[in-house]
Amino acid sequence: MEKMDLAKHFKSYYTAKGKPELLHIEKARYLSIQGKGDPSGEDFAQKIQAIYPVAYTLKFAFKAQGKDFAVAKLEGLWWYDEERYAGISIADSPTAIPRSEWEYRLLIRIPDYVEEKDVQTSVETCFASKGQATIREVSYFEMEEGKVVQMLHTGPFDKEPETLAKLNDFISTNNLGRNGLHHEIYLSDFRKTSPDKLKTILREPVK
Image (cartoon, rainbow, N blue to C red; front, side, top):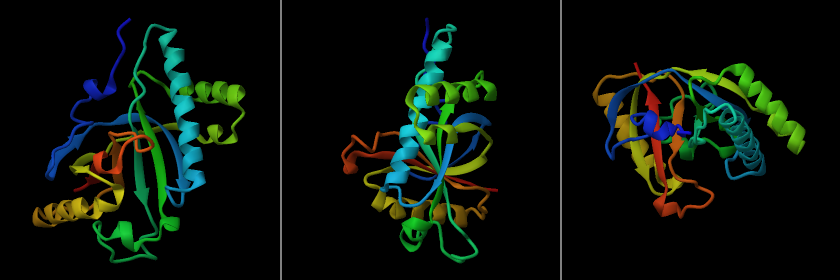
């Protein structure tokens, strides 16, 4: 049985250069769970501990049907109350917005043949096995970002403003406007990787 590797199948989605670039992102399907607050806090950790078991439950269900796939990289959409914190640039937002005020949607991409009902079944199967209430917050999600500007950030998360400033300059220079939520794709497992070696795709939808 051939295992589908989404990172290879959707290569342009999971790769970025060390300088800003403009590209188009296709419609995609995901597992999703939402939250708010400090990403170093317990609630964020619980969200991760909920979405991964569902991803593996889904994977093994399809493997039994002869459609195995590798569980994809963790991703996150990030936003905040832009009326309350008006006038803050992309580059300044990581330091200017209190961590307690950040809202997020964690994502794991899934193959296009996975339907919403399959996700719902896996959520209930996983919950019955583990009994963790947060698991029931995991859901099916679709997103089509379209035109985006992105760049690879290498290093710790607290250095992201330097990369975001380059994205911001590119967006301004090319007279582009924001058109969606800040998107991060964690190519490295930040629970196991040294901060200086972390690789993260930073992506901004534009118009």
